[in-house]
Length: 262
Length: 317
Ligand SMILES: Cc1cc2nc3c(=O)[nH]c(=O)nc-3n(C[C@H](O)[C@H](O)[C@H](O)COP(=O)(O)OP(=O)(O)OC[C@H]3O[C@@H](n4cnc5c(N)ncnc54)[C@H](O)[C@@H]3O)c2cc1C
Image (cartoon, rainbow over all chains, first blue to last red; front, side, top):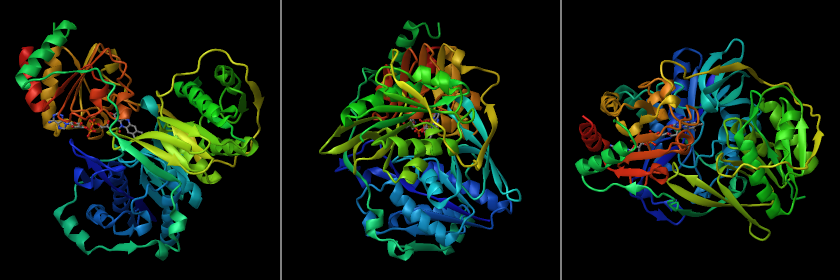
């Protein structure tokens, strides 16, 4: 079966960052593959290694900069990638349905039997794209999967959904399906040197909306980011000053006062 | 026309706390929209749950009897059917693991914008809805304007006070036809048992990704020993297999309320904080002065754990 993995490049803010307009300044962001997607890529590659998946395709909606990140997914074992971008996305806050418009078109082209997404993107933290996509394309789905066994013959995925409070739900999901992958599902590999070299030769199909039969109007967002600010700290924490020795000394005092280490 | 539909959540026979919080959020939104507050309770012992959900401010409760536990096919069908009937401006669900298993599908089916992980909102008839939410691991807060007069919001737990008291809502039962589910729940498993119960500890030294490497865990173990504390951790440490699942604090781990909680190299993500914010005294050691953990800490050291922790160990030797 073919497995499609949705991946996103996300920015992680430096300790010191500036907000420019309604986003963090690009120079204060370290870009990387979204943590949850790393587990999704690993799951797909493991399915290929087990002979269950015959092709793993990574898809991203992202600007040219994201190519380095998607290359990482290729270096880890994805066979090829599709990168969708269009000026229409520039400077907008894409809503779930616009992303699903794009991903639906890619699914139509690729016809995967399994789509793996991360539970959420670390930057925007919506956690909604995978499940919305499943609804749109008529796939079954399961959100927040931390254990996966695929029974291709029976046409089902046996998953654990990680609920709150240390409880897991054991669920049998009909294929085709979209699963949103939780961290801890596996141990994502580091890209090997050989993998990185091979990735240079793998295809990243750069795709615009038009190529997918979509127009800018189709992906117009219903959401606008109107403000971004550092939250007002409600903290009344005592920040202990001084070098490490002094700070540790003061903290030890506080802790002893509370009866710790006595 | 401008009603609000809140979808409650329960698991294994218990209404979850977030359900009562959503009644407060839903009432606020209904007031702003000048509409009624409807509450859906789907599956399980709906009569008992409806009773518990009947709090002041709730106008109508719709009980949908269908199965025992959460099933996203049933929930999506129920919310769709109720939305057809009530025609609500807003559908409000918890931003929980189950909420995220059906709310995006419902929003997609009804073709309304979805805003996830909502902390607060404002509505005015001219400007429409503006939502407050965080981004970049709680490092920044944002406002998001939502186009149109219909929307679906998943609301974060712990942000609204639970509704209290006894209300006089009209309770009705609703029959729905849900298609056969293609995702069948076979059972539940409790994970994270074993040798220690971190929830019993008076003092916890909790280690996060700031520790860098597995070898470095020795350092925090020494600290825990010196303080007579128990060692716990954030999620990535458990994901990496460096500590067993029963040490994980947070939404998907354990909820702990020790006398003293010392967070070492933990950023304070919302899912972590959900598990430890009830601690009496919270201490944070982190290199990043903007780390959200400092917002809930009582004492903080902005510094490198590799400098501070050995000094602290020395203090107690
Ligand atoms: C559905 C769901 C459920 C989740 N459940 C949980 C849960 O139960 N528990 C949980 O913890 N997380 C949970 N998470 C994950 C959560 O979102 C965060 O990813 C996680 O809590 C981050 O862990 P951390 O703080 O250790 O790592 P990071 O966020 O990476 O933070 C590391 C911190 O260490 C600091 N640091 C780095 N080097 C040093 C140094 N030398 N000295 C001092 N400080 C340093 C950094 O400044 C940073 O603040 C969940 C996520 C989802 C989506």
